[in-house]
Image (cartoon, rainbow, N blue to C red):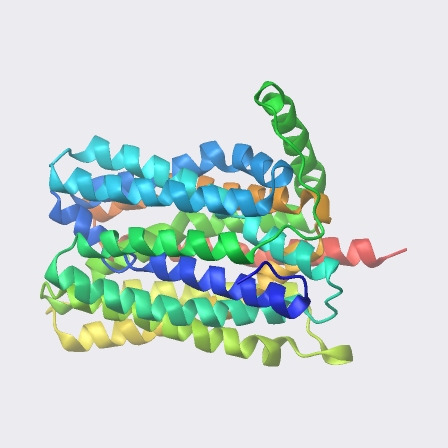
Length: 424
């Protein structure tokens, strides 16, 4: 299997590596909270461990963006795979030997480092390579294909993780480590930096490179009238995003009233399936030619819908007096509705953001976008986790829904910025 130099080959490499990476990552998504609580942590400590992951991303997002924008996007992705392999095994060891909260927090910081090597780098690699090979199609089509494939692999991964976790909660992590090595091998063979000229990164110049890259992020991200509101959307989404996903595992089992770990895997898989449906709707929703819809309008409507689904799930939790199958089914139906809308948002937002960022600074601005999401997550997880412990998980979801509504005016602001760019 050789590195590819055609648009079709580039898309194939992107889809293959994205699918393998998502499969590896998603094995633990349905059971992570239960794994940590099984190791002796309470719900607040779980959210603090997740916050450590987010803080790791905040610390390393810009420096790893330097790696992607100098040595290369492929190198950055490969380094991320190796880092995640090591940190995943540290997670297992922390539980196996009872190292406690601080060991999990430390491992989570390293996991955050691993993901920062990947965020921005792969999307930047794809867009650069497509430009280099003369691809003329709509980019959101490629992102929606990737979303559908990633959703399918997430469906498999979360289901497998749930059933493996029913046997032993450590097994999803062990299998994840093995798959990360497979992803490393595939990326080594298939990816090649096209449309991007790597350059050496000397340690003595790392600080200078970081400042240069950061300045570029400020210029093409913060000072861009379209991109800046999108950065704040990431901030707002990060406040509830990770907290909502991981607290849902505990929330769902509380609604059911039984400790069936496989149910968590099934529900995570259901969300993946719903996101695939959303990805399939992207082209139909956006349309083409003169009928093409404005991305910011679609994203604003979808943001309001996402907040509505989260609020409705929180309301189900508050109104449930007796746990059982019925309240879980109602909440799960709403959860799948959320997943469909989430699947619509992803590809549209990816294409919209990439459209307004120049190639040379693409990985940096995408990392800056992820950085804003990390900051939101670092603040949201401990605060909402404290609310869940002090009051209840449903109340924390209702508060999260209110915060999510802030995305609507932010998308409107991005639209106004786009209109200003179009005016002569």
